[in-house]
Amino acid sequence: MSSGIRTMDSGIRFDSVSVAYGKSVVLDSLDLTVEPGEVMALLGPSGSGKTTALRAVAGFVRPVSGRVFIGGRDVTALPPHRRGIGMVVQQYALFPHLRVEENVAFGLKARKTARADIPGRVADALEMTGMAAYAKRYPRELSGGQQQRVAIARALAIRPGVLLLDEPLSALDAQLRSGMLAELARLHRELPDVSILYVTHDQVEALTLADRIAVMDRARLRDCGTPQELYRAPRTAFTASFVGNANLLPVSVGVGSVSLGGAEVKVDTSGVAAGVSATLCVRPHLVGLGPGPNSLSGTVTEVQWRGATHRVLASVAGHSVKADVRELREPPALGSAVTLHFAPEDAVLLAAGVSDE
Image (cartoon, rainbow, N blue to C red; front, side, top):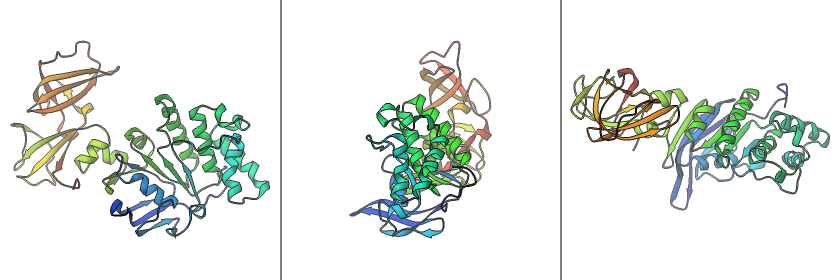
């Protein structure tokens, strides 16, 4: 698929899209735009509505209200085969009786592509996914990662403007998943005009691949931003806990002061009024051992060795605090007193009820 070849129209827009099964609302008034060439990850727990949103774009579910646009065109009432999309699901869905090249050609034939064009389109897609040498093999002769590459090649062969990826790596083991993440990142660079909607519950995949992440929970969009924005300055406790790992500690906010279990800590209080309940968010890798700014006294409750790092868990004012530190030659003993610290600029103060409602 050379860069000189034009793909179909790109970009996705959800205009107040709701989906329901009977009285059960599974997607509630979703407003979201995926720009042309952008990778948007839909991240959230099971049942959050992310797969339903993807299926609404694909045309497999019909919204009860709202509209779906692809490339500026209202596709809400169009059948899937007329939407110009490529789709990859977690179980590959390859035809076992067809060779790799025949699997990749399937979508082209279904769209009545000119017969003379099909071999070149198949070759382009297989070359792009690193599967050209396996064109004559059957799916049973491939590894799981190779089968997933074929599924991606099949989706790319039609030169879609929109590529939908539904948990595409969840069936792979950790090593294969890491390799496929790198391959998907490379494909994104080589397909700068294709919009990608990537559904996952794996935060590492979302942080690695996405230009922006839409955080879903209980059928609604809860937050949306770049991976850096959501990780470094989450707006809600839910976002903080789902995008990366976080210490979320209840604090009391006074006039120019914040108290954690009676100990005053320094943190930016702008946007949080005095006298309200709030949550202090600080990432475990930004918590250090020993005295320092914002020192907290606690008791060690658990020590986990993680190879290059140790995770030290301590009880501070009745709350568990995690510190991820470089591997310790002499980890602290369980039950021992410990001092933790974090820099004021490394913490975020979240007002209660911002968007967790």
